[in-house]
Each structure stands twice: as structure tokens, then as C-alpha cells.
Image (cartoon, rainbow, N blue to C red; front, top):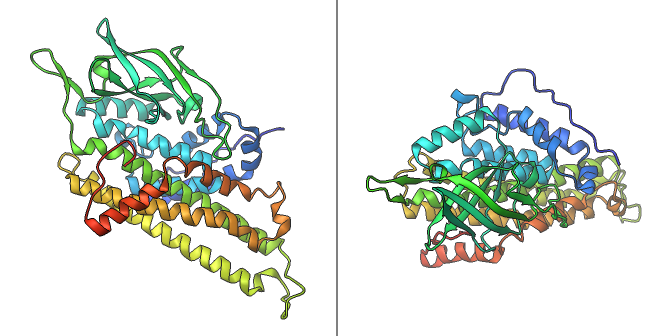
Amino acid sequence: MTVQSHAHPFAGAVPRTSEEWVERARQVATQLAVDVLERDRANQPPHREVQLLKDAGLVTLLGPREHGGAGQDWTTALRVVRAVAAGDGSIGQLLGYHYVWAWAARLVATPEQIAAVEQQATEQQWFYGGAVNPRDADLVITEEGGELVFRGEKSFSTGGRISDVTVLEGVLEGTDQHIFAIVPTDQPALRFKGDWDSLGQRLTESGGVVVDGVRVPWEAAAGWVQRADGRREFVPRVYNTLNVPLIQIVFANFYLGIAEGALTTAATYTRDRTRAWPYATDPKRVATEEFYVQEIYGDLRSRLWAAEALAERAAAAIESINTHPDTVTAAERGEAAVLIAAAKQVAIDVGLDIGTKVYEVTGARATHSSVGLDQAWRNIRTHSLHDPVAHKRAEVGRYFLLGELPEPTWYT
């Protein structure tokens, strides 16, 4: 099987506005959609796809303009994730995770670290991966010769072999102190297993990784400072805990993008190839005149629009928090987390429904493997098991019934 390479027609004017960047993302999605089925089946590391994201300028969307980035906000980033995921759900996920890990310095690092990391990441177009699966045991960090040494293993590490840098998280031996660090991916102490072979989201490089002696200077420990007496400490703040709400709203948006792509693909198939049912009491000339076809598409389109509106509302809560990261309150953080939980569960519900009901309006021949409509359901079904959606529903229920806000954890 020959997997197509992607052309890069992005030599013209650089987008400036949010709308222009979303349009650029749609252009990328159009390219990705051309051979998405072949690439999904080949299940090879998506090096060319990541290069496409870099060529399009999407990798540095959140980067400072003074260093060559787009300087855009999270609302734009999430819309871009939706747009890319409509063409290829795996690449939409990779881009969304990249944005979260690229923002990690903003969340936990010192001002000096943030400035240094964002300049280097933007100028060099770093693509981020992360090995921070909290369901596995924490990486163990020892201090050796004034350096931090990470050791351990993670069963999931999205971004894996196609990233330039990897975010690691571990616990300093003999303490309960967590430390984040950004390290080069291409080093012998990081061994990626290449064992990601799941039902969906097959090109996300989410397999296991062995971390065997990654060395990091103390100065690269995100957010840690050395006091006058020589002690090193991390001063927590509410904004540090925003990483989980951010990644959860990323989830919701690439689910919605995948659903959008499936609905668009199905509609094209219905217009071009689905036949009207000749044995109806009022036979129609073409399938698009069938009442039940119009009704199902109307229902799915309406629900997807509603889910997108809820995701936009959740994004607005994040934007509000980002205007005052040093003074955000636990209540603001908790209310944003509830909105995101609501947006995520609705995105899953409508996405899975679209993934199955499109067959009712395309017909039996649309089940042929060459059509690939199954990919949307496989992708959303696979990733939506990341953490039980029932707990998201319960978070919203407790907030509505009891006024209870979710406490920050690795999943809320």
C-alpha cells in the first residue's frame, strides 16, 4: 500500500485573525481527508502529517508573535482542533494534546521558564508529546549529582515517536512532590514501544514508553525555585490545576470534529449515491427527497450544532480564567470544569449517535470498507473510554443538585 504524501500550499499570506486560522485548519483537514482511510489502515507513525501541521503554522498557533507564533487564544485553538479532526480524528487529537502540553509551562512554570520555553518552542516549532498517564504508577525521580533523573514506565504516551519534546511527570523519591519537565524525545533514555494498535485513533502514537534515566537539571523542573537558604520548593496556585479541564475540553472538541466529518461525508454520499426506496407508499425520485432521510439529518445536524454551542460556552469559561491566571479562584475553576464535563458528555453522545445513524441515511452499500464511515464511530468510541463518562454526568448532577464543585484530581 502506498500512503500519499501531502502537498503544502501555504506559501501565501500568513493568517492573522481567528477566522483565518480556522480556515487554514480546514485546508489542512481537506488534505488529510484525501487518504485518511489508507493511513488509518497502514497505522504508521504520522511524521508527514505532523510536518503538515508545522507547514500550516498550526503547531505555533498559541506561541508568542514576537517569536514567530500566531499569538492566538484557546477559543481559536479549540476551533482549529475541531476543524482538523473533521479531516482526520487522530491528527486532531495529536494537535489538541500538543496545545495542552505546549501550555504546560504557562500552567506551572516560573515566568523566566515560561519565557525561555515559549521562545525556543515557537522558534523551533516543537511538537509536543506527553507521558503523563495517571492510571499508571508515577515515574520515580531521584536526585543524582545535582540533576533529576526520571525512571519508570507508562502504558500510554500520546505523541510518542513523532514528537520533538515529551512532557514527563514524576514524584521526587521520598516525598509527595510532583515535578513536571520538558525533555527531548530523541534520546536513548526514552524507549517507545510502538504498541498502539487499537480500534480507533490509530495514528495518535499513544503506545507505551519506558523512561530509563532521563536526566534533567533542577533549573528545568517546572515551577520549582531555589530559596535563599538553598531549599527548592514549588508554590502551588489554583491555575496549576487547569491542565485537566484543558485536556477534557480538547477531548470534546475533537469528538465534535470527528462527528462533523462523518456527517459531512455521509451527506455527500447520500446526495451522490444513496437510492430512494422504490417500495414506499409514496416513492421518491431521489434519496434526498425521502422524509425519513431529511428528518434524521435534521436531528443530527441540530444536535451537533447544539453540542458545538455548549463547547464554545465552555471555551469562554477557559478564556475568562486565562485573563487572570494569578488570581483565579477555586470556584471559577470548578464552574469551568462543570461546563467542560457537560460539553464532553454531550459531544460523546451526539458523536456516537452520528457514527451509527449515518448508515440509516446512506444505505447498505455505505458499509463497504472503501467508504470508511465506520472510522468516526471507532475513533470516538475508542477515545471516549479515556475516563468513564458517567462520572462527568455525575459531576454536573452534583453541581446542579447540591451546588458541589468538582475537586481537582488527575481526571477533574
